[in-house]
Image (cartoon, rainbow, N blue to C red; front, side):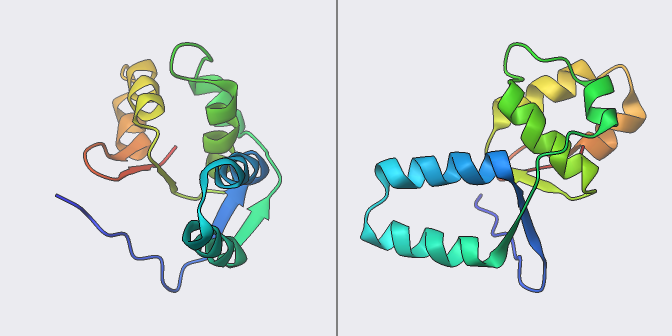
Length: 121
């Protein structure tokens, strides 16, 4: 099942690291249509400085599917108290496994695992 996420009326934010990674992929692979759509998307997005929350630093350990880049991106979202929309299922599942001994955190950490993934840290 494909779920369409509606972002109308929402402020979209993106960490500097995520914006740089996105732009790198676009520069390397995008055709003319994708370039135009990515430009349109990024005009709607406010890029914020990377800032990993203390909670993320305490709860998650780098290693396996939890890479430094993902820690920065998700940790910044947590710092901003913003839901993080991701296709990085490996990170979400690994983060879930690392905090599985804390049931109250799992509920806020994983909003949805199947289909488009929305992770709340």
